[in-house]
Length: 161
Image (cartoon, rainbow, N blue to C red; front, top):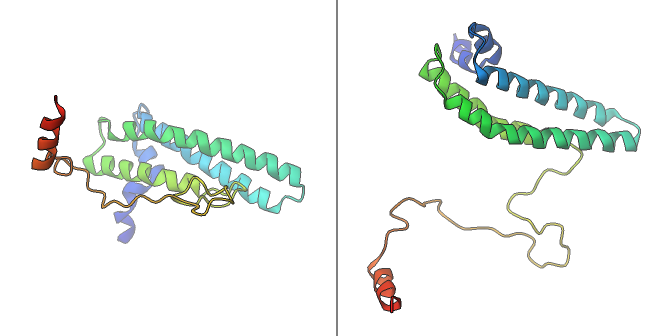
């Protein structure tokens, strides 16, 4: 019974149900899925590779594939929200969820580099005392956040000379 709950995430089943064949999302997602699978297989082979040069070359290829796949995600996101005949709103939501999970899945493919550190672009500078920059924010950037206060409007009036 519980497997029915996850049926909407089954790309194979979605592809089979899409008899029309004109579903760009299903085609694009299947292509990305295949590329991720291929990159994972290459990463597995690299882990067993004895030749350092071969490993470096394959890892570079994997990184290029990852970069290309990450560029495809926004296109796929647009296709996921596009109305398609015969696709229910639940399936549309499932498609969006699948796309949202893609960047993490793509980044998780081993490519010979260390796992990326979050929040820092100076991590390679050994002389810097602070190796990363963090932005503190509560994430609230709605209209209220930028609303003009009495102080800011007074300042605006004073500087309008």
